[in-house]
Image (cartoon, rainbow over all chains, first blue to last red; front, side, top):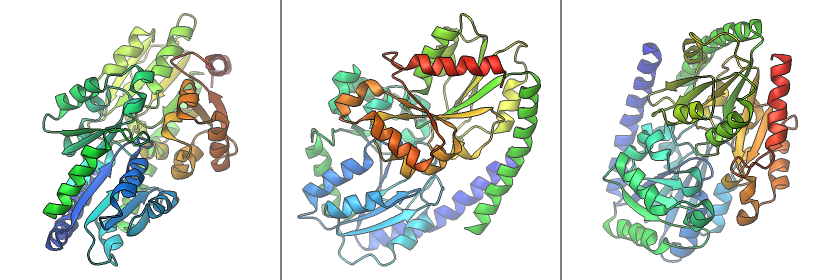
Length: 219
Length: 219
């Protein structure tokens, strides 16, 4: 087991070197960059599409889409108004790495205000890989149940921001959104929490306001 | 990149050696073994609990619970009637490996009829690791959306059986279960499909019937 762990450490160290370089470059451009992570199907792409529909008319947004296979999501976000989109297909790999982002960003247009990186749907592995982003955001869908923060503490601790999504299903699921909040804060008391239903639009204003504040600060 | 891929290959080859040994041992005991995989929150534990409530009175079932952290699930399945339960906490690792199962199974009682291995909630990495099981089963929750088979083809192809779960939410989500079936079969035409709502009990009879048939065959 120790051999495997050592190998992983070396992959992570190599990743960190690239991430530091990326962060410096993003900072030099005053580009706000967020890395969005979640389980498969928590609603990252739907949130992104609804975000683009509302913000793209006034903010120049680039998107890097990480997926194991297909370019379905890249097409969706392009249609929703992203100024620039790159699809990364990891070909089976379970997370994005900084080197993939660096390569994908090569060729991005000048003047982007905001770069959103949608990671591979996975509540475990992506949390270990710094992509040079300014902010790490995770989506937790109510449909996944209340036990996820305690069962996947690595992801909840790696992120500064949590979007509790699919709040429109709270009554059907008989789950209280505030109970999910409590479970998440018990694992990471510093989490800033948004509550959204990307499908109904509930809670989108706070989320969009935060993104706009990042663009104004350029970080 | 090629260096990383080589390292992974060596980890997988090492895993396969142990998996072959495990499969031989399970077969010698005429023990039916299934490895259940899914995203976090797709309903593996709820399905398992409802399965145990119905089958444990007449079948001697052992469970190996794989989680990154906590022993919540082990407690739940114990209360639901599992004859023997071991919790594996992977401490951040994103999948179970054959060596973990081998170690966990050491000390299992004689006479088990069925061993259910609940893998770490992750729709990517666990699919690459043979655990010596007789059958690989994946859960796909309707709440995750219809695009998952095409976006995570590795998992859908690694499994012989698919349980489409949370069918009780089909009308709320405005998703037709047969559309999910079509998407899954397009990626893997050999999938045998069960449709369940572990919470309402719909479709449980076919699932339980299949498990009982495995016990009778001892494989």
